[in-house]
Image 1 (cartoon, rainbow, N blue to C red):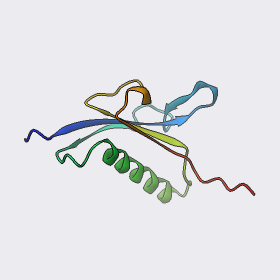
Image 2: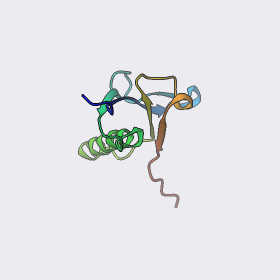
Image 3: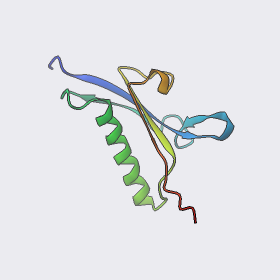
Length: 98
């Protein structure tokens, strides 16, 4: 084990009206997890990309289309939200206004 190993914790949230955000999928354990990297180039953005790729693949397989979600990534342990995260990305489905 080298000195470059890092543990990243992520959570996927979805909008929930006036209540703000809630964990994606209706139950908290569904889209939380950890990723351990040992390459300095594989940081929080890399972890978020892995999670987004997994989500998009799931949506394609199920034929349900894109969802509005955000992926929040922290180093070592889960924080409160985007305000204490290392990286956050929000994915919004394409909306055809026509």
